[in-house]
View 1 (cartoon, rainbow, N blue to C red):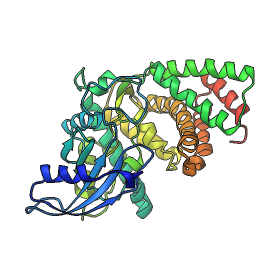
View 2 (spheres, one colour):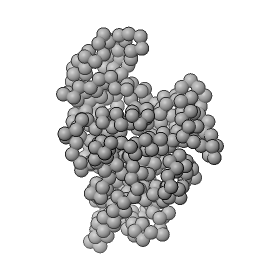
View 3 (tube, rainbow, N blue to C red):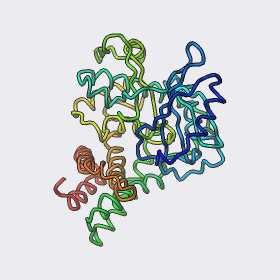
View 4 (tube, rainbow, N blue to C red):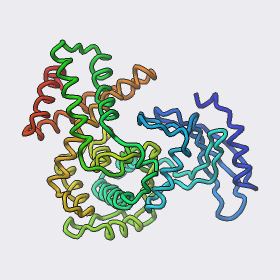
Length: 376
């Protein structure tokens, strides 16, 4: 698809917003499952300090979110631009924007290279704890600042309400089960509907805050400095200031793919990060990061134990949706590359359900999933 997109509007935007820059080359970059397309542009700089490489971002309908929201954004500015401004005001490192053409759907953004957090972990796995302490601290700082987002901001006017959560849970039945040939009996179908309604209500009533919606290792860029690797401070000395100082010394974490941000469960982004479908962490590692987050937020109703409980609850809903989404990519887009993540994702749901067995709702979910997918 990328090759069929005319880059003439991109060249015109460069000429308009980067006057004097000489366009040398445009190369299509790999993309994900969204309709957005990325192009790396090499430039002869117009002046000292001007970029010699930027990214051209094309979004066919930039006023719509990539993910379902059940909220109309047609009369607003591009969600990417609205959320970008909110994050920048909150002190979050986001890509610099050099130019926007709202008529053609093109944008000029900072070229951050190719080193995602996921790739950084492959190169230096020994830095995992330090990098994730930085990611958690960055998130805690942003969550605190974004509590003051304007009431009419895009992230306050759309939310993970019952309807949206319920739709996502149905995604699991439609794709992870039915589309793969797993049939439900009449009794199982009735129980699924009842439990899906109850789970959506349970999650919708958890304490809320800003939600990036996909804060995970492939959506975070790591820009290491020439300094030595980050060394995490002892847990009892962990503060936002200590982590921020180390962050600035060792590199920068840059947020991407934030255009779908909304209001939802306050722990949701931790689920995206620490139950990332593309990474595997020990339970000890996960709980240590949740403890750090709770300490950094320092909210009266967010103890380490409470953060861990909410984490497992949201994991059930989020990972059911993810498992369905991976099959959806295959069915709707012909991309089987995500199918290998389905069973491991269901296993994460079952692990959280086991830790929530004291609550009847989650015992019933565990029983139903064991009947439907006994081998996972």
